[in-house]
Image (cartoon, rainbow, N blue to C red):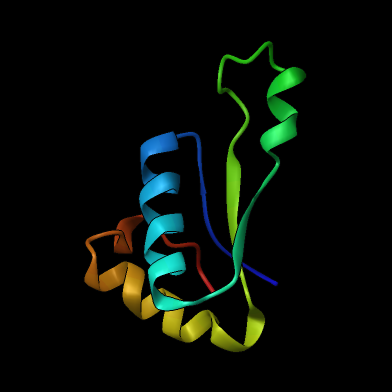
Length: 74
């Protein structure tokens, strides 16, 4: 799995996850359970993880959807 996005913004993560699902790319949001540690304030970032072999395709989809600024460096 490759990390493509790390953010506190639930809307960005939801949108990105939806794009991956529509493209048939397996993904998951890591660190969702960490909100228990920060009192559910959303202080700790969550990570969008995708299949390693489809990471380049996923990166292109996210960029085309306007999320290029959210993408992590390779």
